[in-house]
Every structure is written in structure tokens, then in C-alpha cells.
Image (cartoon, rainbow, N blue to C red):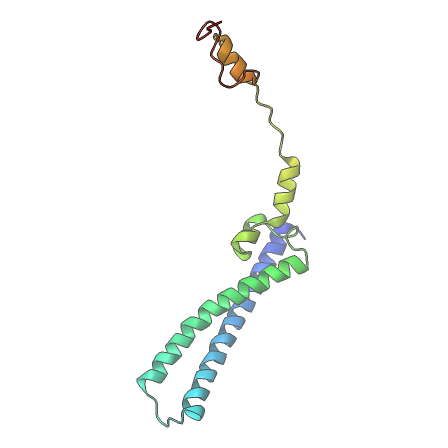
Amino acid sequence: MNKKTYTVLFTIISTIVNIALTLSIIVALMILIAFVYFKILGYQELSSAFLIALMISFFVGLVLGLVVFTKLCSWVIDRFNLDQKLDPKALGHYLPNGKKNPGASKNAEEKKPKTNIPKSPVMIDDEWARDVENGSSQQGHAPDGEGDTD
């Protein structure tokens, strides 16, 4: 199997897991809110506060499902070394920002050619400026011919 096949298979499986995980988190939050509302607080009928709490639990469940899914995908990719088997573009979608394609950064540093930029070919006419450029000039000394009081 090639990278494209692995990527398609991983995407299908991860989508199914994401939907199941998010739904289970939403249902668990709604059951928790219903339990607190009816059993602990002792209310008998539905109210607008209960319905608002259910809506909030839906949105919190979506966000929490996204966070847990990202952590889970990151763990699965690291655990089973899928970064070499999946397409790098797909890895960027499943990994958090700090871990975008971790295997590529090591290879990029090794393959990166070293550049050796020569100094500017512009000739320096002034001897003092040339000494400053080379680092051989002493601080506080004036250029030749200027300021000599000997």
C-alpha cells in the first residue's frame, strides 16, 4: 500500500472515530446535566434553564470532542509511526500546530545545503574603513592624517 491509500484509510477511520467520540461526549454531558437537574436539584418539570444547559453542553461537547480527537490522533500517529506512512499534507490536518510533520524537520535540516556567501565585491577606498571592516583598527584612533598631533 502506498501513502495515498494509507491516508485515505486513516481519514475514513479517523472521521468515524471523531463522530463517535464527539457524540459520546455530548451524550455524557447531557446525561450528567439531566442527572444534576432532576436528581440532585430535585426539579420535576422542564424549564428554560435546563434547555439552555443542554445547548451549552452540546457546544462544550463539540469543542471538547475536537480537543480530545486532536490529542488522540497525535498519540496514534506517534505510537504507530504513521508520519512516514501518511501524506505530509494530511499530517498537518491531524497534528496540532507545534508538531506539524515532526519527521520532516529532521530530514530538512540534514538535506539543507549550506550556503557560503562571499563578501561584497565593492572595494573600500578608505584605509581606515578597510581596517574597521577587517577588525584591525583600534577604537578611539582617528584615520591616518587626521587628528595626529605628534
